[in-house]
Amino acid sequence: MLDVLGISAFDEDVYRALLTRVGSDAAAISHVLGSTPRRVTHALRRLAALGLAHRETPGRWEATGPQSTLTALLSKRRAELASTFAEVEAAVDDLQGMYRTGRFDNNPGDLVEVLTGRENATRRVRELSDSLSSHLWILDRPPYLDRLNGQPHDDSTETAATRDWLDRGVDIRSIYCPDSMAYPGRFETVLKLTALGERSRMLPHLPFKLHILDRRTAIMPLAGGVYDSIVVVHASGLLDALIELFEAYWSMAEPLLGDDTPAGSDGQAGEELPSEADVLLLRMLHHGLKDQAIARQLGVSQRTATRRVAALMERLGARTRFQAGANARKKGWLEL
Image (cartoon, rainbow, N blue to C red; front, side):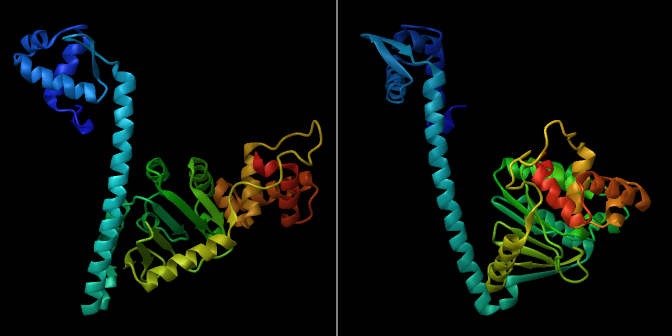
């Protein structure tokens, strides 16, 4: 079990024996393990060098508590492995660059994969997603494959995948547009992803769908905005341009959550706070969703959605949707 820390199986057996036999000598431990005193003595010296054992009296040994010593060794080993992995990843990048350069000299088309057919495209997207390690940057807009297949969107699968990537330290940034909220419940799902740690922003319009993975690969639909026929772009000037395009959109987009105005900075004492439903409605208004789109998100009729919007605007003393958002920010409602 401890070989990852540089401790051999035999040395670990000696250490385990010493843990329950305080003040034992090499002969006693060798008897327990069925080994020789000489071999046990060498093992004890190696354990002492690691801080796991020490001589209590001449010829008598005692184990050091495992909690502090093994934790320290584990931390040191983890740091060494992290450094090693970083060096290996850098070497892989260099080798991949050489590979791409060599392929490009002979066939520039190798820098771009063109995949047609929904099954092939889905399999390739899954392969690239499974290897994700550092970045996932998305321009999100419909249509979506599961909807085209007549299936409901699986929010739980999307949420679980996002949580797993975030736990692995992946930087997830998604830019949405009002069209991204074309299906019931989508806005609320996006808020959940944002609460998990996804960095989410909104723009009034996005030209196409795009996924950038680890800043090494980009996936785009070939036509029609759906990943049933895709282009996979590898390291190249084209990929650099797509990354710069995303970063430009990101700088222009507005955060889905958060505001610089301190919560409650303009609110009156005793004022009734908005409900979760009010805050959800405010966010949809703030990001430009029309009554028809809001109705789809809430699962109500457009007339009901219009009535709720009007009631909320009246409560905020606003004559326009823009003014409603501004007044809500002043009250700190969008921070709740």
